[in-house]
Image 1 (cartoon, helix red, strand yellow):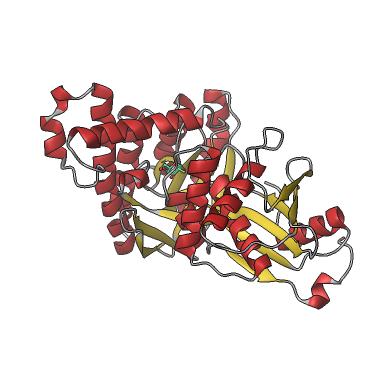
Image 2 (cartoon, helix red, strand yellow):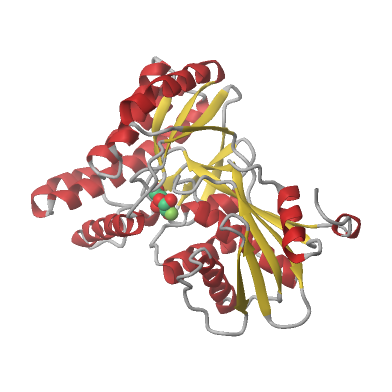
Length: 398
Ligand code: GAF
């Protein structure tokens, strides 16, 4: 991972624009502990914000109603976005579609936007399923509104990000990633009810640790597969005359099995059982019952593999390796939208070294893929902060 931080973002801004920024915004990525593909079915999710994220350094300019934006991690590509013009996707700089979508959505909701310069940099590994998109959206929203002196509630910021991604970028994602990036709390996961967007904090027991292992399989064909899973869930709900799968009972689904295409039945079964597991997992965490959390995580993985069909052979191998190395003391499952990306493991601190040793010793030999191991803790949500005059006029970065 790159050593991105507030001071790195500020230094890169100064190098790109020749003067210092006046503020910096940050939004974290996320890891989902459990509750996968349940958010757009109005179900439950249990994510935590993580330290890797996106930084946006910014400075207001007084003249042209234009944003000049540099993407540090995309070869310092620079785009100029007129604030008053109709926004359309940019095939030359697809990363800027998130910015354009956010601009459209903020304006639609009546927020004022001011001209300025922005520099974006981040350290979420790409294709990892750790929500680099939501993190980018939320950091941009914080930066843009700080520049125009407006404020926004975390839930509204999350909805702006999600709508930008749904309507402008074209991924029919749910609300989980944006909400946790906006609302994250240090050392806490959030049990979110995606029907009414309420959430409860669930503290990580002091001795439990979160390990993320990137499988080295970059998520491919994600949007089309993701959107197809969503359509299958909607078809299942429609079969029962429901708006979502939230209130469907497993017994009712099972009785109707013969009337549904088998794939649609299985997708719905994953969602119903995953909702139940997520609520149980949150209770297990609150009570410090690791054995119950481990069971929920392993069952969740099996359901994503067998019913929702979103894991890959490499990811399945990784989960198995961690489960074996943990000897009953580590929970593991794929995290995020699927088709590659990362596995999350939760275990007591004393068990983490043996998980790392097993992954380093065997994963590449078994799959041919190189793993990336990241130890994270639950972190706080998005924010923006002004840089004092003394700091911002401190000159060129080192
Ligand atoms: C992606 C989406 F963006 C989320 O909304 C969620 O559906 C997740 O996949 C699967 O749980 O991260």
